Length: 482
Image 1 (cartoon, rainbow, N blue to C red):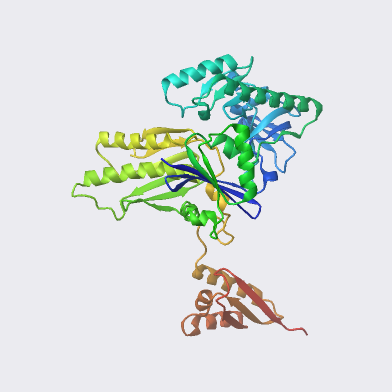
Image 2: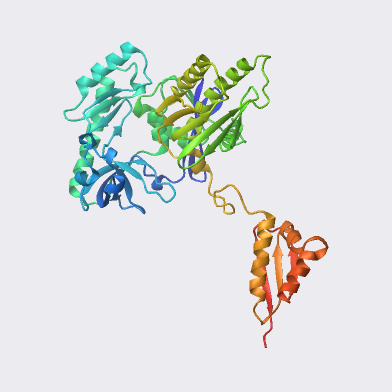
């Protein structure tokens, strides 16, 4: 598989695409470096403790308080209620694990982690882990042994995927920097009062180079000289693979357009996703869960219906994993595959799904088929959904995906006209609106308008303007000034 990293800059925003086999697999966008909070470490103050929801709100010095759930408190293993773990007014060290979204503040954890190139230092957790992306048993055992030798007293470590093949000295050097960083944070914490920012994580370009660019990245393509120079300097600092090619693109067509990534992004916001076979997925996202429906569509397959269904479901399983990763979908996910009676076929589809999800760094768990024949799974909410990054709530439908019909708008408008025309000083009413609404208000042979004028005993003028939105209306009154 050919993997590339594409980095572009427009309007002081950084766009990053991870491309696998010429297809966009992941997308990152940093709109304003100063507004980013994820990964930041704060000395906060407990504002409120709410035992009813097992959570506390933490003043971080930001626009909205952070949300600290009981399971995210570093002593959560004691299984004590939140009001026994933290008290109002208490100062706490917390790290943002999830950006603010909508009316929700940032989610914070007291189980702080500091990522380096090869290791993640966990100052409040004495466990030792090795990335699940490293599958070779001998390599896992080797890295675990190095990790056990390096782990500082009272702290924990995670050996990252990129550590595969590296020796003790590489990991030890990385750890020294992380321990120094942590000591600096603690020192600053002792000098400053809450709420205060103690540590600001690196910008998007550095994080991509640190966290994403592994040995299997073939090429990094950028479209700005300053990004190229920055990557060269980061490459030296992080000791990245010298075989990875770094290219500066200077074409006339925008880089994302040239590589077809803009179209991939546009497709990733659609509800319907076509499969190569002619089948398709329908993805519906809500606050509580995500439902994915699989359909055969144009795919008729062979004369064997069972075989057609199995092939469609297998292809759909692979595509589901890709869409979850690209769209940054997390939480509870329900997949309605095409009905299968054979238990072995069901297991085959689950196996394809699990293997496809294994390529995703974000942790997921497939629970299997329910009694209703639906596949139930979860995926960790690690990043903001792509739809929330690229889109905003429609001002017309206000996020419902539907708007009032011309009939409903016309009825509401007629009621409004009657209310306004009731005032004795009003001589006539003029209405400007969308032509479809105007047609409903006037009616065939002006029958609706005549009834409205008879009911109000006032003159009513209706004008349709195709420059108006469907629900856009302007009403003006001709008032007797005497």
